[in-house]
Each structure stands twice: as structure tokens, then as C-alpha cells.
Image (cartoon, rainbow, N blue to C red; front, side, top):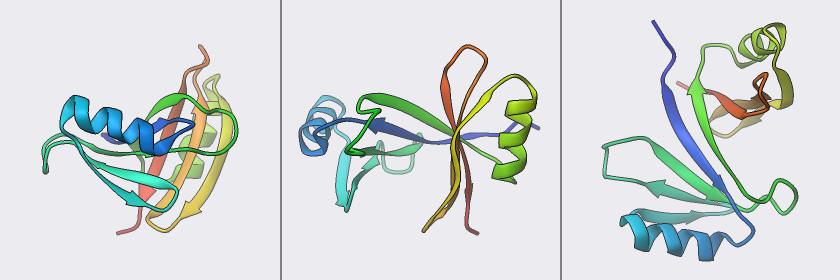
Length: 115
């Protein structure tokens, strides 16, 4: 069975301005949560996401996250298959995440949520 896409992220320089844009464009509900703006795309329909301003490169990006059982093992497999580690694994309050590049240079997120 495949692994599901469970989250997305939009990187930007100005979190408030970007949040206002997407809120007005798609009627998304966005709640401030410290360095992120948590996005509710459709009250339980679709996947959730967030907007963040890292304060450093990359400033502008979009990312999707795939739920995995073991972030380190999946990151290692991505590298073994010709990808490259970008960051992580990094523990966060809700679990652990990492980023990798596929062989074409696309950056993809891995995530394992706390149960």
C-alpha cells in the first residue's frame, strides 16, 4: 500500500500578506500559530497545511509531505535511490520531519506524526 500525502507547506517572506492572499483567494481559514499560519482548507475535506516565513533561504517554495513510518529509514532510501538529503530528521512538537531532493531536484517532505 502506498504512503499518503498528508500535509502541505507554503514558504514566503511575509506570512501575513501571503496568508491574506490565500484566505481571500480560496476562502481558507488561517490561524496564526507562532512562526506558522495553520491552514484549514475545507473543514475536514482535503489536506491541511501551513504558511511559514523561515527568515532565510528558501523564501519562496511549496512543499508536500508524505506520511512515513520511519523518517530516517525513508530518507536513507531516498538517498540510496539517487536522491539527496536536504534537512533532517528534525523533531517537532507534532512528530518528526525531513526534506530530500529527488533525482531531478524537486524537494519533498517526509513526516511521521506522534500518535
